[in-house]
Image (tube, rainbow, N blue to C red; front, side, top):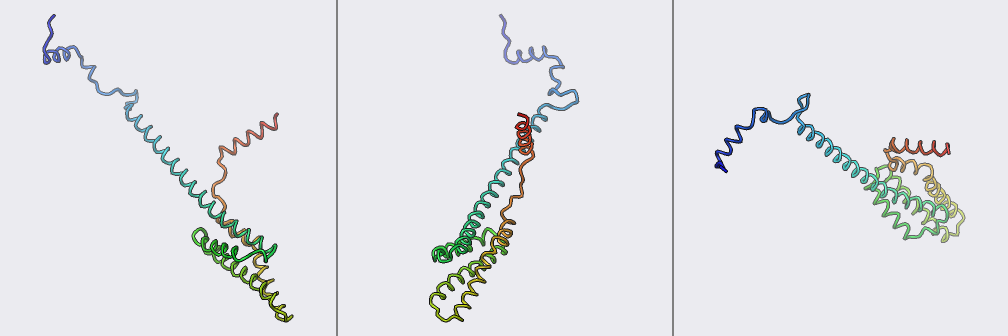
Length: 196
């Protein structure tokens, strides 16, 4: 059998192909190239995944910030509870911890919270000082003045439950609500539960 050389084989193959074999890339009826459509779909998918990753990272950052703020809030709430319950139980170690918390709050809250906590720290120190002064004083007039200072400072500390919570709430509430899909799922569950 005769085998043509490389050039002759190419010519033979070329002569067998018709012009219809060289029409270019296949297209849809509307003239769209399938590779362009696949590339566009892939780009949209990649952009969606990137957005969702960014959103997840953002939500994690918000949650981490909330955790740090919540820890500061808990220290303040515990200090108020301790001071209003028994100021004698609020020792120097707790006062130092509260002072460190006030310093830490500077980085996680606005100036309104920081100044509020600084005033509270001053009131805590006033209560602790007046407790010590009261024990050392025997003069009734001096005791009366000391108790008045103590009462005023302790009343400001007790106001945490009304004014302090509102200040902290501005920083600790999430802007995000429950997503619509979860609310619908919860509604379906409640309806199904009532039906059974």
